[in-house]
Image 1 (tube, rainbow, N blue to C red):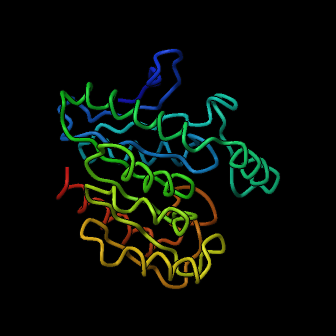
Image 2: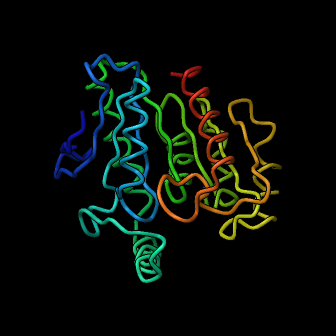
Image 3: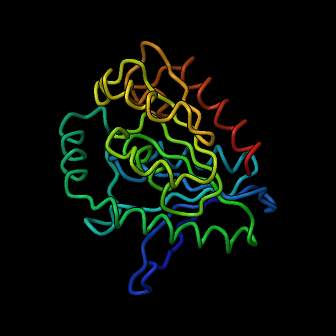
Length: 232
């Protein structure tokens, strides 16, 4: 079952939309927050939610760009829409985004009867998944091709629960020196696991469009599902 729900901000002064997918018949084993790319809660993100629901999880994808413009949905394979997405990312307040993710965690816990809540994010969402692991009480987090993690390594001491990061080996947004810094800073962290995917570019695990690389996407998703099964 899918729907759009309203989530109240932590301050209680506004609400924002979130796409929700629930297992048929209810009885979710846990909840997972699906954190959008720079393209909004588009068909690919909704499909990620639907797949998690089919696997028995309550999945919620909050519209994190709502403060800029509610309901943004963009296609990365269309050049002008890619540019729009980059422009929105430049205007997005990531600290407020984390607060909205925290509000979504609270809503997810309420719907899951206090059960565990995980998060999985892609691109910008991968970065936010790392920040969520460091700044909230999320039970487990996964980031795909997270950007700018080298600038967030000073927060790694605050990561208290398991975090998995999938790294594209030929990511044109995350250069080789940044990937090296990620490994140097995180390989010895007891709560963090890094997986590299040689030869693939940013966005390799997208559900829709030209960026997907099937073998790498399938392997990363299998690792993600095993990770959530173990931690949620």
